[in-house]
Length: 310
Length: 310
Image (cartoon, rainbow over all chains, first blue to last red; front, side):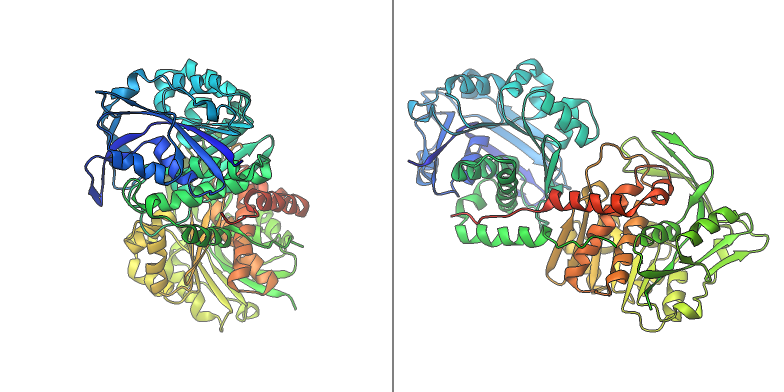
C-alpha cells in the first residue's frame, strides 16, 4: 500500500494580473497547487479535502483525477459558487494587491476527512481558515507528521484560533514577514525560536526569491530559490513548495531532519517551475525529466568542497 | 615565496550609528577591512595601497603591521587629514544614510604600487574612485586575477570611467540593486549576463543578509549569508567579503570556478563575523578556530544529499 498524503485547502478560481498580462477566471487554490506538486511523487496517494460550487467545471475535476488525486473529500455544493480570488502583482513581483475575494461555498465549509484517509501518514494543512484546519486535525488518527501553511490574514483576524492549530502541528511554513509578525522578533533566528515554543518542532521560513530556511532545535538548513530569468506569476509558489515538501516526505516515509532538507529542496525545485507561467499552467505540463534535471541545477548551485583555512 | 595579494582602497575614520549605539571616529575604510579579512590566510603577503593624513594614529598603523600587512604603498600626507565617513543605519539594518563624507587626502590621491607588489598574483580593487583603480591596474604586470569592488555612487557620478575599469577586470563584486542599476535588468540572471558582456568573466552579486551569487558563463553558484541572531553593525561587511574572497584565491593560487565557490564561502563566512560588533572590532579579535568552526556551520547549512524523484 502506498503512503498517504492528506491535503486540506482551497480549490478555487483565480483571476491574476501581472506585468506580463492578465487571466480570466482560471483554476487555482492552495489544495490544487499542493496536489499538483505532490502528484510528481508517484508512490503516494493524495487525498484532497476541500469544497467547490456547482459552477466548478467537470474538466477541472477530471484534470485533478488524471493526476491520481483522490477526491472523495471534495464536496460540491449544489447551487453554490466556488471560492474566487483576484489579485494584481506589482512590478517587482514581490508584493501584490488583492482586488477581490469571494468566499462563497468556503464560508460555511465543514471539512469531512474520508474514512480511507483517516490514517494518512502525512497531513498537509494548506492555507485557509484555522477552524477548518483544526477540524481536520481532530478527524485524523495519529499521523506521523502534520504540516501547517498559513498567512498573515489569519494572524490579523483570528490569531487565538490559529495559535491553537500551531500548538498541534509538527511543521509550520510561513514567510519571513509573517514569522516576524507572529513572533514579534525581527531576526529570523530568534523568530523561529519563539515560534517553535508555540508548538512546532520544525519551522520553515519562506523568503520567496531569497529561498527558504528550515529550523529544528539548534540546527538550520537553507535552500536558495533558483535564480530565474523571469518570474511570470508567483501565484501558488508557496503552495507548490508545501506540496513538494509534504509529497516528498510522504513518498520517502522518512521525517528525519536530514530528509527534511531534501524535502525543502524538492519543494523549492517545484516552486521554481510554478512561477514560469500563469496559475497552474506550468505544473500541469511538468514531467519527471524536467524535474530531475533542475534538481541537478539546485545541487550545482549550492554544493561546494570547503578546505578549512590554515 | 608566498603568494601576493595587492589591495587598493580607503584607509579611513568612520563614525557609525546603529540602533544598538554609536561610535566616535574609529578605524575604517575598504582597504582596512579587506586587509583584516585577508590576514586570516597565513600563507599570503598582502600589500596595501592607500593614503592617510598626519592625523592617523600610529597605533592604527601598528595594528595593520601586526597583521602582516605590507604598508610600503600606504602614503601619509604631511599636514593632511584622513578620509572620514559617517553614517546612520535604519532599524532594518539593510539601508543607511550617509551623514558626512570628508574626502580630505583622498581627493588628490595618486596611488603608487610598490615595486615589490608589481607582480602580485591577485589584485583586489576596493571601493574608491575608478580613476585610482585604473591607475593601479596600469601599474601592475599581468596579474592572474583582478577583482573589482565598486558601488552605486560611482555609477551615478563617473559611469564612463567606471566602465573602463570594468572592462579590464576579471571579477566584479556589487550588490543586487547596483547590478540592476548597472545593467538596466531587474532579473539578476539577466543583469549578470549584461555585466559579463562589459568585461568581467565572473560576476558576484552580493545580497546582504540574503547571500551572494556567483555567475560565470552559464554556471551559477549561491552562498547564503549565515542567519544571525543579531546584526550589530553592517559597516565593512562587503569589504570583508571581498577580502575573504581575494585572500582565499591568493592563498590557494587556484582561480578555477570550482575554487571560486570556496572563495565565496570564505568571504561570506568572514563577513558574518564582521557585523557582530562595531567597525573592525570583531575582525581584530578573530582567531582561526572560530573561523573554521563557523565554516562547518556554513557547510551544514547548505549541504544535502538529494535523491531524484521517481
